[in-house]
Length: 167
Length: 167
DNA sequence: TTAATCGTCGATTAACTTTGTCTACAATAT
DNA sequence: ATATTGTAGACAAAGTTAATCGACGATTAA
Figure 1 (cartoon, rainbow over the protein chains, first blue to last red):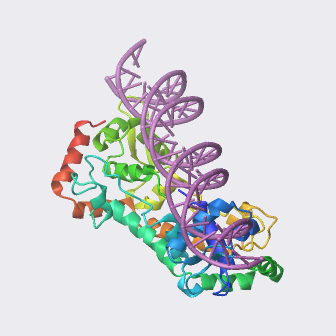
Figure 2: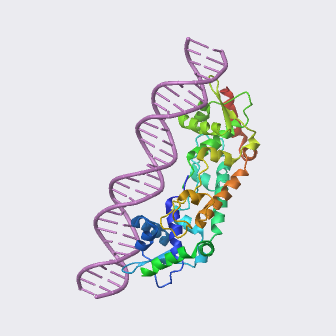
Figure 3: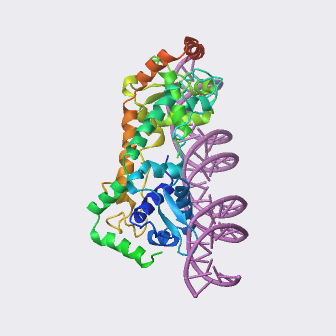
């Protein structure tokens, strides 16, 4: 079980969007070039975040992406959900004749809802612990943390790169 | 991102092994037939749990599986780990020239260890929340919960099935 | 108004993982 | 001995993720 690399691409890309003023933006070409990622693939990641209102996009010449919310209103969970969707990690397939289901006739839909399949409930609640943790970490917090821990040189390098290619 | 169905197969199968006396066992054929699962595939799942010491196996005629520990010493996490492995859900691919890494020269190994890639740390800690929850739920607890919530008829049905085919 | 630039969308391909099967083999009760 | 059962590994099928490509529409600068 793994998160798709999209999650990594998304979180890392957001870092560069934090400081972009509301009337500017960063193009997919710059974002992908600086991080060494595929332009077309990364654009799908940003597209997903755009759909979920995390970033907003500007079409046309000098277009690109910028944040669509304040960094303190974007959580890690928002990003994961935008990219991976809300489907639970664990899903009952409703094993036939199964001991652990009250109603062997019903299928998985009932099980992932407010079902009484104990095993499913445990797994869903376990995942909920992870989600709650992610809901508590915002992009604003991430920026502070990066400013605190990263060498200045590296931070300046990034700022320089995106300033040079400013949209 | 999804858990493999192996996790479901493993947890459900364990339920039927809880009450097996130390000198008896249940064969893969019965376990798979009762649950409507592929015999060969389920045997791989049990094999993984056997390797991790959760169950023990008896070869030969009248062979099968039984628990290798007390139900209160088997947690959900033990089962997930046996089946899915310990690899973290999120793994840094060390994006080239990446802003969020202190040392762009090092590769992912450094990042998933005690690295200072903040994003990676957050994701690892989030996963740890989920693991801790699973570490708190034992198979013994699961049995109590099932006895409490399942209709007697269903429980008896299962017991009957495995008694008939007792090894 | 035209041309270049940029994001969006869907089809397609490539790589990889999961699921499942098959076969040969080792252990064991009768 | 022999039939039964678990073990292991090769293999195949199906599904998912990663990545590419091309057509399209929106926007801006000239």
